[in-house]
Length: 201
Image: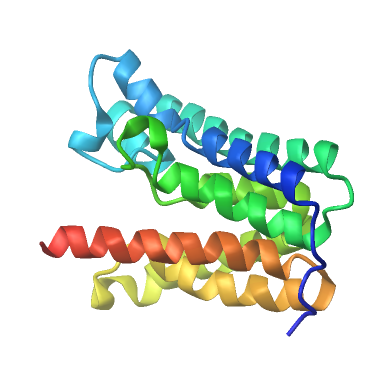
């Protein structure tokens, strides 16, 4: 287990974390669908894949880019305003931007699953962990679809996430980036459990 991150200056840390949450709350899929005269959440989740299903490939790519971009922006803002923050700040900001996307304050706390903003934050704060996640996904997704998906009847994304996150945590423990992935992954796990409960209600 990596060492716990060092303490942070309270006021700038609070401001940066709040800014990350507000950025996360700008859910691109909701904004896009409302611009088209609808609310995607009436039919699907407001992430890139849901937008792709409801509005087509171009819309899905645009929404994914927007949600990744807000993770990047939150991480860059944190680096600029609290440069001594290290992994403690990285964990707070990653968790906050993912939480904002999953539970957006601007849209009734009904958001997406959190994958895209997590990827964006990791791109800046823990690129080695992001590479480990992407390489794992590149191997697992086609293998799973060819072998287990028909039997398990489970979408490839949650299955791949369940495999990739432990690999990413191991990479982070060895080379840095453990805490931001743990923070973002924990928020995503809470959101996934919430969505599963809603489906069964």
